[in-house]
Length: 111
Image 1: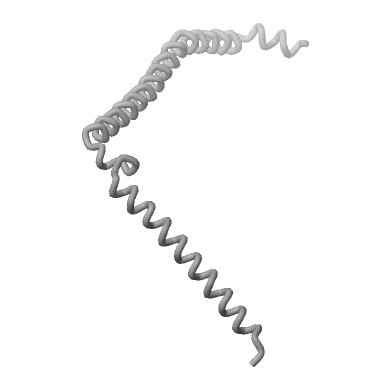
Image 2 (image 1 turned 30 degrees about the vertical axis):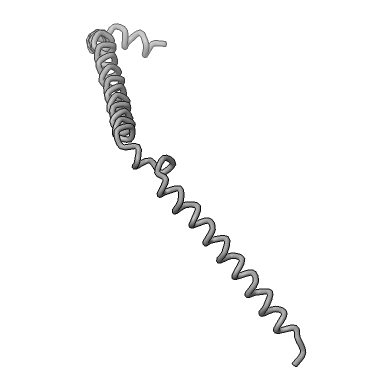
């Protein structure tokens, strides 16, 4: 207890206390402004990024509206090629299955 009373009577303790109080007051005065500015900058950056993304999507949509032949589902040639690919894939699978069955049957036949 005597140590605390000695510190309270010391001018260096009072100088430090006043200095720290002033420092805290200055920080408390400017910190909200700095945080507000940083938050606005961050939100504006996100807003700008979203706006650029939206404009890019609108540009792509307008391009596809102007050139519908580039959309695979509306291109008749693309549909025919797609159907042809499925047919050839199916025929290839069928040929593979028949070949496998014939080879298995040939291996099981006694000579």
